[in-house]
Image (tube, rainbow, N blue to C red; front, top):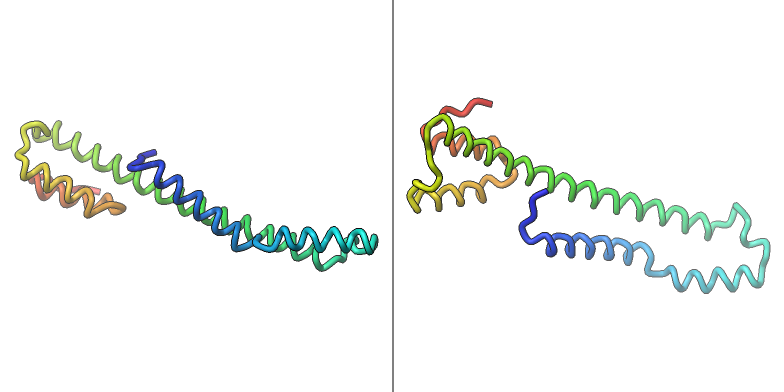
Length: 142
């Protein structure tokens, strides 16, 4: 997995999860007190048909679905980032092998353009490979 400021990404992910939990469960302490009062005053309130308990179950399921969606989105971002990096490395290896392009011998202007292209085509590895092929005079084949 590729990290560019991993602690910031991890912190942002934790904050998203905390926000979702807070949105879904802000009333948990209040409801817990109310539930305790009901349980003390009415032993029959804890039955399976209790609407309050059903509400808690539905809320928990909704929370879990949102957390799963956040995790899945983060995994997809990580996967795209990794694919882009692998495509970049593969293209650079091909250039070095097939056309004897030494990365150290590239001019500063070409290096800056290369960095700009990698940032520009972040998330679109095929377009990056095509652009790099044009830059170094290589035919891009999918």
